[in-house]
Amino acid sequence: MGTRRPHGRWAVRAFPKSDLHNHALLGGNRQFVEVRTGRNAAPLEDRLSDIGRSASENVIRETHEEAGLRVSATHLYSVRHKAKQPYDPDARDFYKLFFLCERQDEMAPQAGLETSEVGFFPPDKLPDLSRGRVIESDIHAAFAFSNGAQQFATFD
Image (cartoon, rainbow, N blue to C red; front, side, top):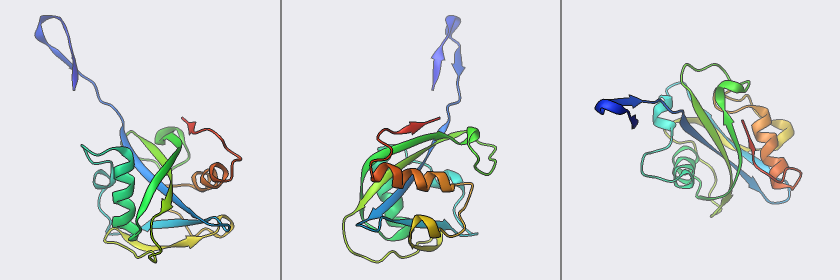
């Protein structure tokens, strides 16, 4: 997409893409479902939001594909510009949208084609994270938002 300039020329502007993540929290123990990407995972472009789907539709679809869980997206709790946060470096520019999700069934999580391992973990016993995709503060923010300690979505 571009902006029309005088004399019929178009100025093309590049906009950051959106990378969507979900955090599913359960009951009183508030466990987090961690989806770790395997070495043969799809490239980042395949994990970004699909054109024609809303952010919540993309999160719901990705959660089912990567972890076998049926969820509904209930809250957007953080929007982060990846380049301005302590994630692993990336040549591309995009925003990371983080959603809290609620499970819609009691199915056990199962690794999908793009994941090597899925499971539920308390915030003080997280496995090694794929720091290009998620960092510890993203997960702790999910718990803070869920228990009311953080009342508004964070950004930047």
